Length: 163
Image 1 (cartoon, rainbow, N blue to C red):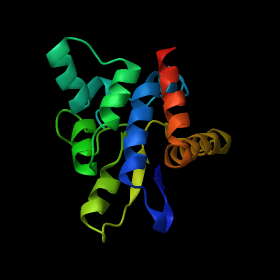
Image 2: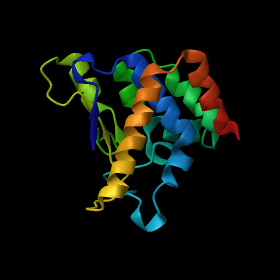
Image 3: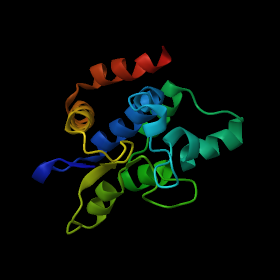
């Protein structure tokens, strides 16, 4: 599913917040889908398990960063290209993550790029409208939150990952 922001487009601040939020709450987001329905394949890899950032951190410190530490590290990237390069799959494939910001990064360097969207790949394929509508509401709600929440409130919510 692709989520865009119309003519307004998502900016670097929204993408930094999105990746910080995803890092902090990836375990909780995974539980939305039953284990047998989770998309965790070569084409939908976990941020914590296979992003360049996570793998480099694990190689250096022999552990995965905590929810808050990883979120803060990802939030510190100042431009969309460096953020994208850290959250893509360690193999270097741009679109293999469960949540891909590659469309946003491509649009930043090429205004004519067609898909100025964030791609969410966790949900199973389904024709169950109730399940899919709930997933759409969740994803769009996350996107509104990372775009619109006041900075202090955003970090208060991300700090909940400690618990």
